[in-house]
Each structure stands twice: as structure tokens, then as C-alpha cells.
Length: 116
Length: 178
Image 1 (tube, rainbow over the protein chains, first blue to last red):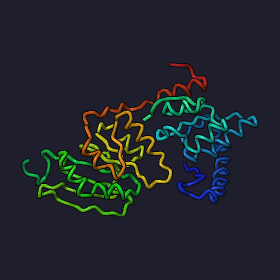
Image 2: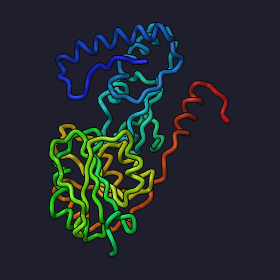
Image 3: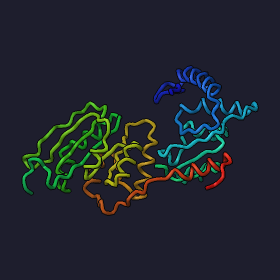
Image 4: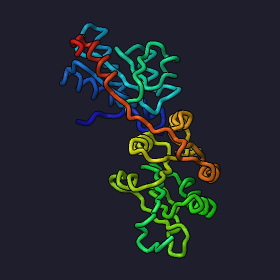
């Protein structure tokens, strides 16, 4: 099953606005069709519209999905953009990081060690 | 040293990989006389370069004259076999290449691409180097890294475990603990 990316690596932020909108509409359609109980993702940007839709559903009272985000093992000292957004906006129900430095910087994250 | 025709006996291969990226700076420096001489000096007989999307073509050599045998290719569907038969791996800083190599227990030098704009991957290489699982270098420092490396001092990497994540998720969702 394919889902649309909000933004390709290196894509200009201006055109990203449109592709993000397309990805969001697609995510909305997927969420309604599948109604997942769990959304488990690791970034990158592909997961962001899905998480936002799931979160908006929760906010309006449609409690279909719990959202779990695992930050990439390549992120040791700084979060990825998706990770940062999901963490700061408190969209994920549980936020996992693989390095202790990130857990110290982002205390609401759970440190789970390296998964690879 | 014996016949190096098939190179089966005593063949020590250095495998260089840039993954799916273009990393001409690494391929160029590995193909330099300085680095090739240093690899020979450290006891390696063969150099195999996976050059990915790069445009710089290394110089092939049979190594019959006692020099380092050099070969290259662009991509293969799986580099696992090449990693397995290597005595030393020199890789770009992609997390896939790094962990695939570490899990096979192969000595690894990670070379960070200084031309990349957002170089978050260097964080991973530097952290693992600090924990002594691999050596970390940049194209200009690769030769001295090879000259000074002590592979016996590298700490073996223990594969990770996803069970803690599964446990936390199960607990959150209310599943009974096993």
C-alpha cells in the first residue's frame, strides 16, 4: 500500500505546501477507510499527515487510533523535523528515542536503546 | 607471499561502499596512490569499490605485479556477500550500511561526506566511533586513519533489541504483561 510523501528530500519548501496538502487529503481518506487502532511510525515526513489526521480525530472525540513514533537510530543528538513536530505538538501518544542524549533533551520521550 | 593468481590463499579484501549515494570524494581518495599504498602496507591484497551513483571511475588493476588489486561496480541487489568476504569495510555514513557491517562483526571505517548539506548522519558515525565500535574519518583524513588503526581495539557491536518498545506499547494499550 502506498501513501504519498509530504516532501521529497531536498524538495523546495514552497512546492512542499502543495504536496503536503495532497498527502494530507490522501491520509484522511486512508484513515477513514482503515480506521487503525494503532499508528506506528518512524518518520520521515511520510508519517506526519497521517499522525496529524489521527490526532485531529482524537481531539474531536473520534478515538480510533493510538499514535506511537519511533525516532530514527540515525538521530543521536537532534530530532528529525517530523520527530520535532510530533513531540512539540504532543501529537504522539508515546514518543520513542534510541539514544540517551535525546531522552535528556526531550524528557517526555521514552529511551528504548538501539533497535538495530 | 605465494601466487596471487586467484588470490584465494591469503586474500584480504577491503570493500568500499557508498550505498545509493554519490560520494566521488571517497571513491577518489580510496583510489589514490597514497591510500592504496597504505592498504598494501597494512596487509590487504584487494580493493573492491561499490561506487553507487558517482561519476569518478577508479582504475582497475589485476594486482599481478604485487600492487593492490582494484575492481569496482556501481550497484548490486545485496552487498551482504561482499561485506561477508571483506577483511575491512570502508563505508559512507548511511545507517543501513553501518549496522549491516557491524552486525556481521566486520571492522569498519565510516567516512563522512563533507559535501552533504544536512549532515545529521555524521552524528551516528561519531557516536559509534566514541563508543569504539568503528573508526570515523573524512576523505582528507582517511589515509592517516588507515595508517593508525588498531582493529583489535574495536569493541564488538551487540545487535539491538526491539522488545522494550513492544513492551511499552503493549502496556500502553492495556495488554497483560507476559
